[in-house]
Image 1 (cartoon, rainbow, N blue to C red):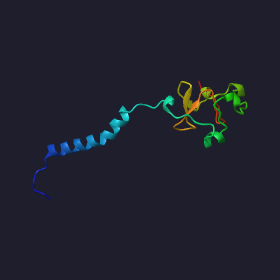
Image 2 (tube, rainbow, N blue to C red; image 1 turned 120 degrees about the vertical axis):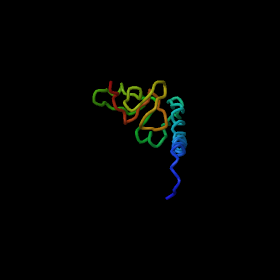
Image 3 (cartoon, rainbow, N blue to C red; image 1 turned 90 degrees about the vertical axis):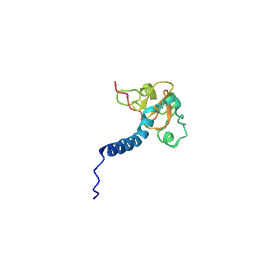
Image 4 (cartoon, rainbow, N blue to C red; image 1 turned 120 degrees about the horizontal axis):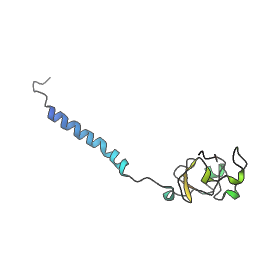
Length: 114
């Protein structure tokens, strides 16, 4: 051990500097803009996930079936629980990072609550 007394001011300065460096990435997250569906690339009907879920940009062209509480002809991405946002193209949790047409449909459709 050293016989020198502990310099509390120096220790406090080091803590503040370390905390400042740790906060830099967090500041970038807070100032970055939120992505909106109109900025996302549109999902294509030949996307492997879209093919598997029978996604169509036009719900009237999709093989919809009646589901509890919603006749087939009323189902579309605009009234699906998995779709988020407003506008012609909306985000969808089934297609992360891509937007679906609000008039589209896929077999993962779930009635929006509320």
